[in-house]
Length: 122
Length: 224
Image (tube, rainbow over all chains, first blue to last red; front, side, top):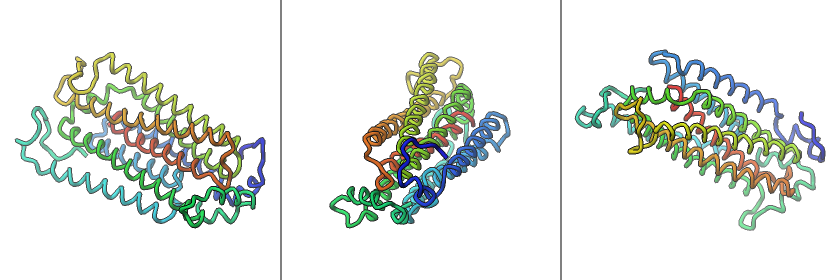
């Protein structure tokens, strides 16, 4: 626990008022660092199709940790969770709407010079 | 962290909390609920804003897969990784600053906010070096692109998207930094206590969003 030059009455109540101590924040930070090192170590190796799903999975795990614990979503009111989850749902709607277009395009409609006519490189 | 905390407050902090009740709210519980909900609504719009850019990236990466792969190799992985670690650490310090102010440790909170702001400056300086390198090499957006090593179709698009996404992100870093400086100034003036700390909380939430965006930008631009 950190030292404070001006202890206030509330400092005694820290376990109640804070809900939890700094241990959880530091644990989350350590996991984020490990995941960053993992994604850097694997990111520029040629793992074939594994590269992108792996990088995105690690990014999603990191984002989830930040949202749940740094942004306190894990103890947040229901309406806040709903708002954030709904915004993510709309992101998915947008992504799959556009992918539907990409997957079903005729080759003629592709931009000039584009080498790829296969599905999106996910 | 919402109304239940109020029960643990000392009478002095509870009085301080009630002092900040705006006239259009019935109770402080309602007000705190409303400010948090409003912040999450705003963060939802921010997610959608960046999602549009990520989607643009995905579409052009699909069309120009090889070129995008080649272009991503020109970015410095050392600088990118350093910036990722700087941002993650600043996210930790701002979360700790929030915790410190909430538990009445204003001195510690101010110190942690200063560390966070310094991390933000560090991020921008490193980003500045990266941009400078690209300006010199001619890896510029659109018609200004004149980098000789990668000339395939879509090369300028990669750097258009690179500058748009990282530029918008850097703008968010500057805004987040300004918000945290404002929060720090108010903290130093003694405006916050365990009874009234939600400006620190909202500033921290915005800063975490900046970190969140970078968590996706970094692998997409630098690694894959």
